[in-house]
Image 1 (tube, rainbow, N blue to C red):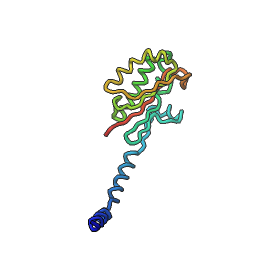
Image 2 (cartoon, one colour):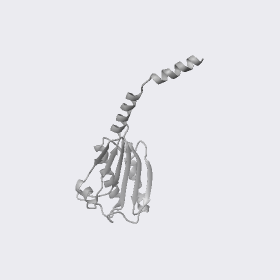
Image 3 (cartoon, rainbow, N blue to C red):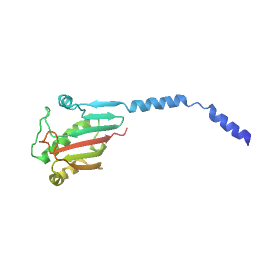
Image 4 (cartoon, rainbow, N blue to C red):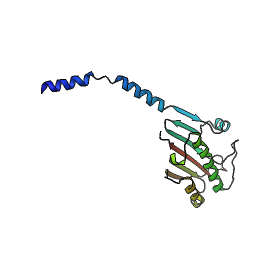
Length: 160
């Protein structure tokens, strides 16, 4: 019995796992590489932010708002159109990373008019058809700049 225990301990000690551990560490480091993406570089540089940051298989997308390429608000006083413009912008970003709205796991919506948002929210059913992300709706006194009525931020997980 003592011989069997000694043999088992000796057998475990003889196995070297260091090369395998090194390979695993390299794979983890590569998969967690950070990538930054600017949708409107001049606007984002002026406000000092990245529209998206990808870390491994996870993508964090800053709040999308209804704006033109120069950063000017569009669809002023039209929450429904602003919402559609936000989702159109988000779709461009998702396509950049070869993702769809099916890959979205978190959605946060900020609005300056919650009652109107609730009334117009059925548009989301056209966006999310297969499964739904977690969702938070947050009322805000104002968004920057003040003409924005809605801002939508996403978190995405892209499975390999």
